[in-house]
Image (cartoon, rainbow, N blue to C red):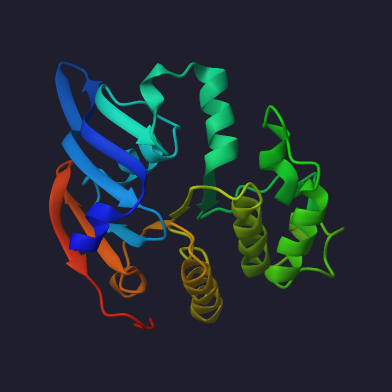
Length: 239
């Protein structure tokens, strides 16, 4: 993986520890964790329950802060940012795709896609045009006025992917993005991730399913808050 050393780092963690107090016990969800993700890479993040996957994802997404250590996004140290600055960074540099879609039921497709731009200090003037093109890209160009309850699960996840892309983020974080979908729809969503990766997007996919994890270029497997192993996957693997 020598070429990774030369690539632009979009997310870099250095000796990151995240601990939680459980009564008199201290649980280290991440323990002196160091790793970096480079521009254009496609990673799956795997591990058993309690391995640290969710904590890592929350820190990468600036939803949670490390107890100690350094986390940089596009070279910017996150620990020095206040809550407003963190919110702006999330809306500018990070795209989220959740298992439960997390769409706002009162908003239609176009409005849901636009949500990340609402939180930017200086939203782009072409936001609505960008959101419309993304809706078309994920096959929902004719459903812009529909609300989430009028869509299937797969369509809702497509809205979530379009929403994750509307800010042209440095990283797309997908948390069990196919977990609530039937197998056919899950494959369609994974095909879409493959397309995005081919276009140069940086994607980090948390999953507990081996066949889903193998769709990524590489797999980072965690155990007890540490890196257990790093795997190179065969390209073109289909679940």
